[in-house]
Figure (tube, helix red, strand yellow):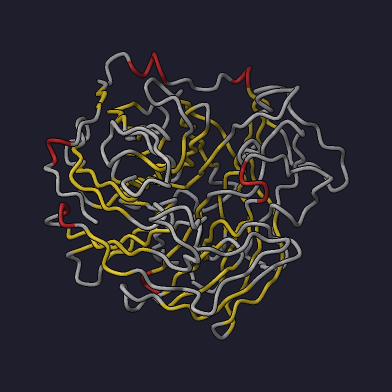
Length: 472
């Protein structure tokens, strides 16, 4: 439901920061003496795990900036969205707006304190959308945690007006079944609205607003001219015959994330135990047209990315939920990895797995996570986060033989115990890679001689789960 409280009652804290002095105080450009440029390991060569917080990279990626997290948003960093010369980074305590007009010297414009994990984020025009997937006492930014067993508890979508980047304004809230773990922005065909495909999961008989089987998603429609009228307009059941029941793979009870390709009228859903293709020609009634499972190697279907031509899908497996050490010899190359599928006559055909070839320490949480295409003409190249495994740039032009062509990473946060850390999302945006790391916002520069065309494109907006076609 749409909360009817007037916007002025939605109290939250905005911390605005001027650029004067901030670049010196908060932007750390990695000194050459602190970074080691490492060539790709030869096949069969012994891997050397860097020391605690030691930065290593391939020659074609170079860190140009790091903006450490600042109070009050020192909780877990999550997803990133981009528009114009701004980056918007979600944090479990709210979100941060960065000015990235100079990628080597980003600055904090404002911070909005609004707790509610994960604060998955997207932007469109003057609107910003946040996902709340932790049960709260109400829909305000001053809410506190409250059990989902209480009917009055709230989870869902929050809408902000960001026309003034120094002072975002909270304008609407929409409650959704089981909350909003992630959401995907889908422009309406008439240009007057946007839809949010809300993914959520883990229902329980004890939760009044999240009853099993929950094989659906929530679709929120947001009129661009009157965003306060945002509302749930549909809750389509994607698995009318039931999703995967669970065994080696997590049982399906909704989706974790959805990526849409509006120009192709397609969406790819990573739905815990199932990977699916959907027809989204009717925005309010997406329809599953293909489904695959991998009960041998996939534990949790987490996210999806199309290639530019819309003929392939990369699905990721978040084995261990993002907190486990899975990039090691014990787990191996096929679990906690990416799976590349070709789309052949409307069917998903498995081709291969991709996993970073650099083993991590058993103290590092490492698994396939969020990434995006690097729009290089004639090639399928992706940049991707692997938590403490760092940032990987890899080529899947040959679906059966993917290979890493660049990387950047820090050594383990701890040498003695498994500690959560690393990069949550790593996305290409206008020639640079931006990573929401637990040590802050990292900016990496791509060597275009090594990856020709990586700096040739320019876009005005990027929500990584809303893919747009790049012209070759």
